Image (cartoon, rainbow, N blue to C red; front, side, top):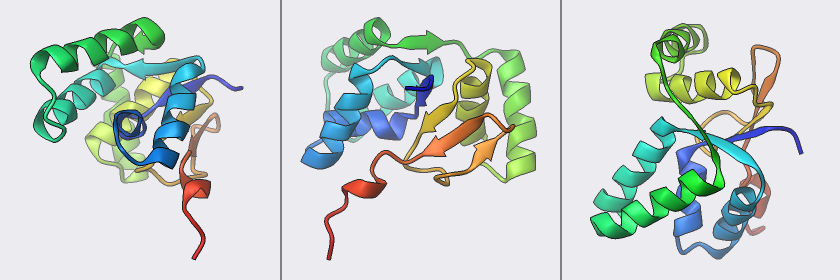
Length: 138
C-alpha cells in the first residue's frame, strides 16, 4: 500500500456508529498511516464538542493515535506551503494545511471524505475517499 495520510474526518468514523464506515476507518487505522498534530487537534475537538467524550476519554483516544500512527508536526514552512496550496487550488486553509502536511511527509495518498476524490496535488498526492463504495445501492 502506498504511504497514506489520514484526514480527521476519516478517523472520526472509527469512533462512530455507522458500521460500514467505521469498519473502513478502523481498517485504515490498522494499516501504517500518517497524521499531523492538526488532525489530532481536530479529532480532540470533535470528541469533546460533538461526541460528548470526557477529557480523560478524549486523551486516551489521542494517546492511542499517537502510539499507532506516524505523527508529523505543522511548522512555519507547512503553513506557508498551505497558503500557496489554498490559493492555487481554492482550498480552505485547514484543508490546504492537511494537504501540505501529507506532501511534506512524502505520502502518496490522502484519505479524506471532504476533498475531491481523484484530485492529485503536485503530481504525487492523490485524494481517495475510502467511503465512496460503501454506500448501499438504491
